[in-house]
Length: 391
Image (cartoon, rainbow, N blue to C red; front, side, top):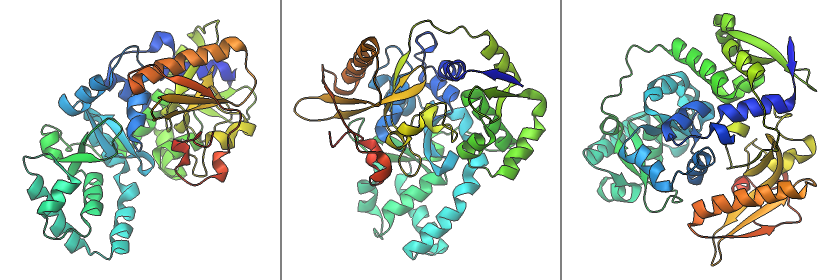
């Protein structure tokens, strides 16, 4: 079994993830396709994850691609999380993952005290209201007969692809969406001739293409499949797989045979590579085994109790700091270095911070370097979205 260094593997995945200077592109749909989807639980994550992988994309470019050209769509899929996925992959990904949250829907309605019949009746009413229209939750509530559970029903209908999240109501940072009927948003999408078994196999292979090499634990974490399902799928295309080791780890990592050839041939840059990543970015969220991505002593600063990643600074693919942006009278970005770094690396970081500051605020920003940070592990859920708010 061949062995590679952390830096070799990290640089290889950074390249596949469009996070090296030479691999950045301005094709938003291709970025989403190549990185396994844009994590969309947080509204800003999708914009920032795309920005960091491009050279000169604007927020309008992103909005045109998803909401005007409709080359992408926002759906619930892997790990029961919401992602933005390329249009042509939506039927496959949905079919592969929908059973994972079917029980969640049953429990959700039970907790609401609503029968399936009541839900179906309300969903039919909402569908009728949305026909030929794009409406917000507030707009829909104005027309439904019973308003009590409308917000919850809309969320469930999105999960079942009855309807789909459309444009944010106001700015790119607005968590509120408008909604459309799914078949009107994507009138030409077909869900026929796709088997669940083949779609699950596709997800595993697609994951390795986007984020491999990876351990079995990583694959289970990302896909949401159990170990038995995962091992069966890996066995089915084992002739396309190799196993490697990473220096310092006793674990075995799966890699596609075609990727192993690319890994061997990859030429690394001589200079240090600094990246900023948004919270929940696939580069970090794509793996459960994270030893090569973050030092043990830094883990609780980087991930919350649920394993969700905050916004971070990478050096050659490994976490060395945290960043956070603040909307106030004076646009500001805060940074916190988790270890001592060379001044040249700090300067590169600040240059990248200024670049993202212009994207976020459309104007020059000030940078505040924090001297301390409370670990996310000891904080309330959701604070990974504002990691430096106490600085």
